[in-house]
Length: 215
Ligand code: AP5
Image (cartoon, rainbow, N blue to C red; front, side, top):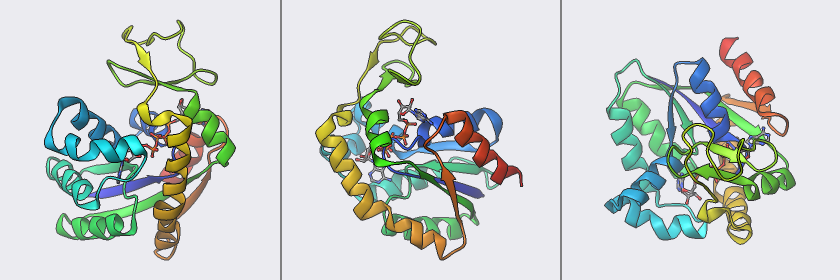
């Protein structure tokens, strides 16, 4: 098993990059944010446990995250290649991932550190809209749908994520700095960090990442 990790603050473009990479590589996209939102929608026990944390922009407990990640990994073959989006998010999650990789004979190939200025993150998150039906992600200015409020792919209604209100975004940015940014030094010490200038067009970010993957 091989893994790459997409690391970056809220709105850095992890999900957008993952969608592009899915078209051009064999990596399986695993987004803990998407998994938790699906659990919330279905009313499962994991969703109920995660609800309050997600609404406040706080992190869901490490034990919950590591459980859903192991369940996901266990479904694939030993040759699978995973692209983790939004995981790990704490040092304890990174240690837990190291244990899982040992158990499933896996390695981390690269950790892509998406670097974006804070003011750009704020602009991206306040303008984000998501399709209620298929989850496609738009931006009111940089990636608008053809018809306002309607998904281009399936005509679904577009909505604003509950945690994309300005107050919650500010908390998510703070949580990122305190709990997730320390992972940069953690993976730097292992020689795995690949810094990616991700403040420009999404295609440019994807190209930089593909350069590393194809090197
Ligand atoms: P999660 O869904 O992972 O949220 P996040 O990390 O805050 O990241 P986002 O999904 O907000 O942003 P993104 O980087 O994917 O950006 P996107 O591509 O959408 O997590 C949500 C919550 O779940 C957390 O707060 C926590 O409670 C919980 N959680 C999840 N994982 C957890 C974990 N491991 N541990 C504990 N708790 C966890 O882009 C944003 C916008 O910008 C879009 O509108 C897009 O169109 C636009 N855009 C993207 N790229 C560009 C570009 N290059 N140029 C212009 N616009 C762009």
